[in-house]
Length: 113
Length: 112
Image 1: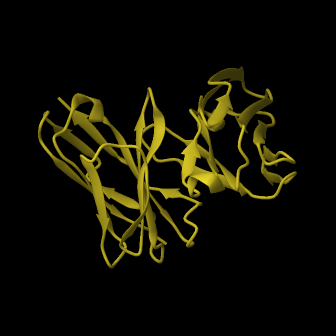
Image 2: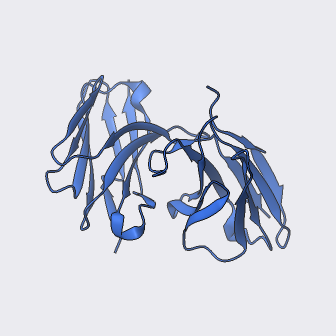
């Protein structure tokens, strides 16, 4: 099976812009989660989608949003970018309804200047 | 206070040495996972433990889950340069809706 794919792999944006990141889960996986990874804060949970519904949400401002499509593909959007949003954004898919075991993609490296 | 504490933060050892990484919480894990991440890549799942007292082995890696399900350890025997990477523990807590909480990670460097 193909693994989790994320596009783009690298992105440079300026403050105030918005960005959309894309994730294709492993075939058959219905749960998709998004994480932000930074050197200072480590891996932090953003949100999880299951069958097109947001099932869990982390403690991030409303500028961070996401959605999941009927084919389980997911997108994450960040509006009004800030310098502190520079990070590696990781998408992970999970096979079961519990969504616990995570299979990660390679991530999108976002740099905000 | 962090929900999940991982230690040590950094380990630099010689090839052939043994090491242990610890993961602790004051809350009970409903499940716990260990991941390994290399630079520029996403974390790769190594193991999931669910039952208190559980021990799992993956080649030279031994994973233990505490009897009370509040702690876990990863032991590497005869470390090799290929073991270099960031090791992350991640726990799910029933009282937090089973969202996965990651530890800060242990950066392991194995020198040849």
